[in-house]
Length: 333
Image (cartoon, rainbow, N blue to C red; front, side, top):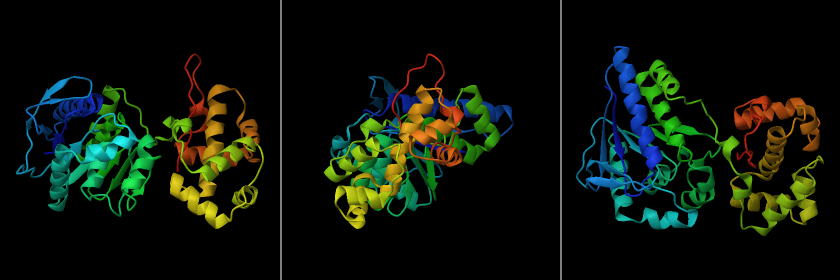
């Protein structure tokens, strides 16, 4: 019988918490209709009535230092809408430290753990992500890398499973995380039917949703590289030419770009080109061949391949429906 424990802290994301419970409720009804074992779950919190971010309250069983979880998957929704600069302060709070210890102990005893968005930072604070692959909200990537440099961050992915630890991206990726857990524990039929009843499409990547203009960095050299790449985006140039133009060695450029963005210079330049390609596909009717030419790729086939690899989508899937607002987005690798 699949069993889940949802640990919710004060100020947690209301939507992520509700999605968790809605997904479990839908899956339980589907499992029962299919004659499969019923799902069970409980909600834990340090307070008997936990206050969620939007001002809602949720009844919960007590969570304390002596709490024992048993055979269950511990699920931690996002801690709340926190700015990157606030993360370290939130991680130092007593309720986060309590839950981080519980997650570490549960995992050490063979239990499974899952978290999304800022909740993934709690797993890092509990020492669970060192040497492991993980993902989190794309806009918290730089803060995550600073705090947990020993973790392999895969920001573009929506859900990452590494051993008995599953992590997911920004707030509403909690639903993607739940479908991943349901597929693992209840089988694909239950998970797929739950997705259909809840009208959830598969979203394997966060890359399509990243707002490139939000991902600014403080390194002056990297900012100059970005400016040059945008000015010369229709030209074909590589890292060696960029280093010469910026009057630094390729080694220095690699070190500074990797430290500021978590990517190599070539991957960083490719991200800028793909961000422009996404924008052109979303806001114009230009054929893929012309889009490729405008971003410095002579081969449209290569662009199609890169779009599929980075966005898990075909170019036609990035076209914006008529009347839908567009925003500047780009991939991060």
